[in-house]
Image (cartoon, rainbow, N blue to C red; front, side):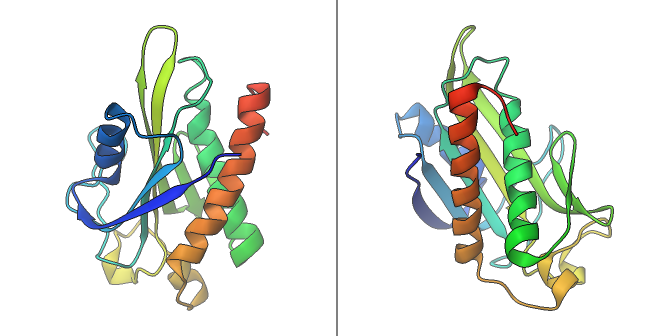
Length: 184
């Protein structure tokens, strides 16, 4: 099972940028970069991920998976499904995975996943899974197509507990993927 090590950095350009740099420096699988604010957060190519300071979960997870480059895209599905399952089982929020990399609630985006990989022709050297989850944001903090856990329930959430739940679920799903090369 993957052992996660969380490193909190109050402000970064992008958690994925930091995690990819750490990967180049030889950081081990399981490094988690957590921030309160990103100055240059990004989504799918060409899109930015804007989030108000301290309100949402902004995190990147470094993996060194035993997968071929062709299997690497499965990690986006694994991450989206892990987030959706935790939202449902732990927080009673129904959501759905919308390909290629979003988690939606009532046709509004609650979470975006950005997976970036460093590969050779035959091997995945490192993968970074970036997760931007709207947790405690208000409507004025979000674009019209966005929604947060707080907007759905009226409650405020502990982001560290939420992250712990997501990492636990992700570890289980990754263990299965690593063992079988398939996702559930």
